[in-house]
Length: 126
Image (cartoon, rainbow, N blue to C red; front, side):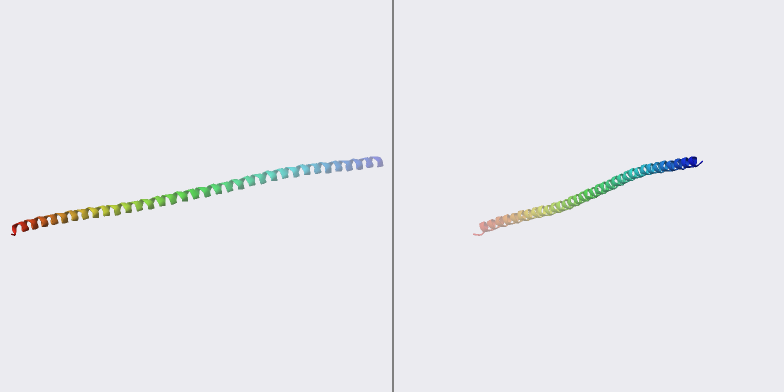
């Protein structure tokens, strides 16, 4: 009986040892799996952060491009207004020039008429 009890004790110790070994093996496997999952999660988070940063940069570029387009449109509108004002000034100058030439023409006609009248007066007077 003692031998049997000793054999059973040894068998129990061996079984416990195997069970601990199995648990340790399972724990190592679980730790490896957890580490793999954590690394995969960290990789995904990194990719998400990179994508978000990329989207923010793209959004910033888009906003800057829109601002440049708006600035260009404003500049074109300003130039168009300046050109219209320049055309108006030119039109006024042209109109004033035409008036001036017309007045000079009238003045020339009056002077010519006056000279004609004076020549006639001088020829009449002895």
